[in-house]
Length: 296
Image (cartoon, rainbow, N blue to C red; front, side):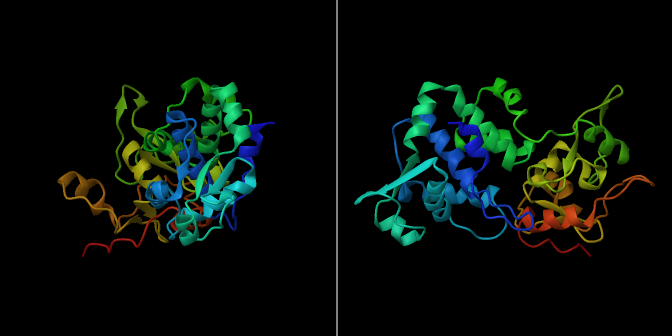
């Protein structure tokens, strides 16, 4: 059985590019727990808060529940659930999962494959990360999930997933004249820019193209905040700052809060700005909460 192919075809609710990372996050969580205790089960009541935190931080802005993937992942053949009464999930109702002692774990055949091929776990986890999350969040997610991955596995996966265009970084940085579109940072060591990255507005994992109309030149800090939904891009290409962001230090005020309502820096004349369709996707699928009011 090709487990990578099965993982790549997880059934997910999709409509107009809507993010639905519920199953991928549960599977990543289960892989992390498998590394710690290969035979242990995940009782819903014991892991519900952990899974809810993951969905809140890395899921879409709308409210959601871990009960959905805990039940529905069974249909993909990689997860199994049993209750105090025996095998089988009681359904996706939160109360049912709690009261029946529902406990999930990786499917038996998948557990056996992971025991036979220990490196398979890293390959599966990296595939999920590549397919569902931007690279800026991979290391953070692994830390949050307790996943310890072999770094050499990444190259083995690239033949299985859509290839990124390596030229995008240079095209986007050139379009923005090697300056962060949010703060204008333009640091270099000699002639080499440092701390500047090409950010996908519509995530590559969700069909975002590798072109200038889907890119922003951002420094490392603002790239991470953009991918976490702290920062966004408004209708008039002015910066949105989420009301959910809290920061009391002068640095937090200067580098984040004070950006609310500011026009972005660039792109240079003749370069195409971010397309409305990609900007709208980011606002709906990534940006968290309501934007802060523009300072008077």
